[in-house]
Image 1: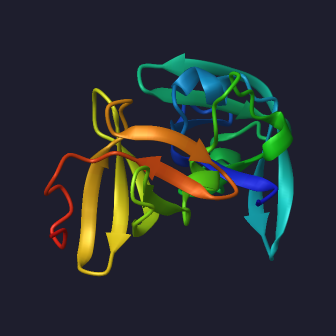
Image 2 (image 1 turned 180 degrees about the vertical axis):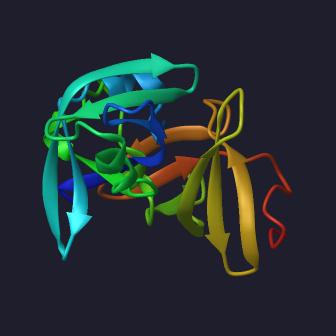
Length: 170
């Protein structure tokens, strides 16, 4: 498991006093707003950015970092991906990080058949969608209790899809 997890991207400046606007890659913008230190990748290592203040603005988060006091400071980090230390991410009991799901095998709960591996998790509205890389391409599976039986970070994601869901199924 990686120590640093991608949690968003600085997409623009906000005002002239060093604030930036971030697109959060979290369950909610509030999850990013609660973190006190984020990191950016510089020369192969993670550099901490201490957050002086943050605020949710619609689906975005406004961040003001220590040492960033001007428009030019803010411009210097525009379009950078920001990371959080795994230990700083608050998780509810039973919740898992998407980063930990990626690459897990997707397994039929009844037969044990491996359909493929989870390549991504998309949030397009009502529920997450699991993107599964199969031998024949890509399948999309809603991440709802009707299909997802259990997640075991050691073994895989156990599912019960409806008959015919996977194209190559007989």
